[in-house]
Image 1 (cartoon, helix red, strand yellow):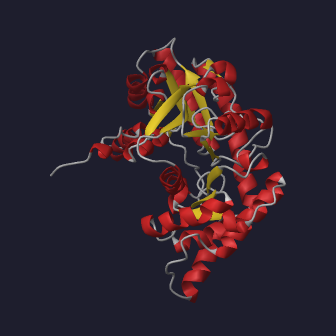
Image 2: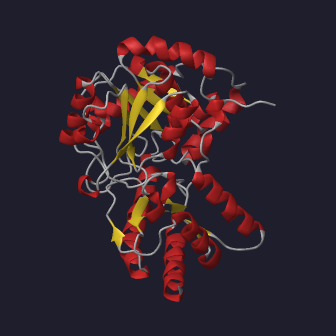
Image 3: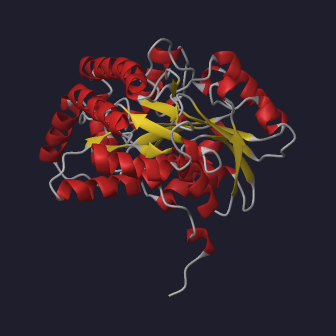
Length: 380
């Protein structure tokens, strides 16, 4: 059977790494998972309890395409609590995870062949979703001096239809402050390029609160998710905030693409937003893990790292150790029993000399993983 050109996207390498780790686990090996950006905790207890009550009360069917009104209103209230932004709940759209938000955003904003700028290193699925939609991803190689975040000079004169940024970023954990965010928004607007802000790691910050694009402009798409801070990866529920005049545009596309986000997940997400004590307990684990990584990785021999501002990743330059990060990650997995992600996932041009380490799992796992990495590097 024939296949489409749009289907010729690259694999998501971290998923291949996860599969290799699973095969070793099936063979009886104990693997420490530092490859995947998934919290080691599950959904907040109150989320599961709320869903249980809802399921006992009656069947869960379709919701309207934009999502449960109560959830949209609660998200809007969160923007007031977190950022002092007065957000109209009508601008909030509930999505099947942030991935659903990317599909809706790219479909609503761009036409075939449009050029969309994305920072490199960056989340690999941006590139692949754009390609699958017959759009043109334009990698913007970011500099260490700019903490691997794009700056206006990186896309000056590029005639972009859109610019996508992430703060905190994956894989680096770096954040944009308000002047840097404003500069990017104004530079994009000067090119008449749509601005999309991926904010799925908001809430997971260490020394300063992350800046939302909505503190600067209403003329942007903001994408977020319950996967990271709210620890609900498998529930596949997220949200986006769009300008007033784009709500109906996105609604029409969502009706046809998804009908709605899962009703059960929306109920759980609404309850999770009030689980502050449990969520902050998770944050205490991330902070402890971050401290362990920032001391333990250099002790193991991974010395070229920068402290992340948010999220739960450390991005390491391993050019002094390898020119083939994929083979190096496979060697670490096989010999040390630690699963890490090669940088090729995030930067096709320069990722052959970088690795990403996730510290989203339990502190005991992080301690064990760092010990194994140190032993491996001493033997190597």
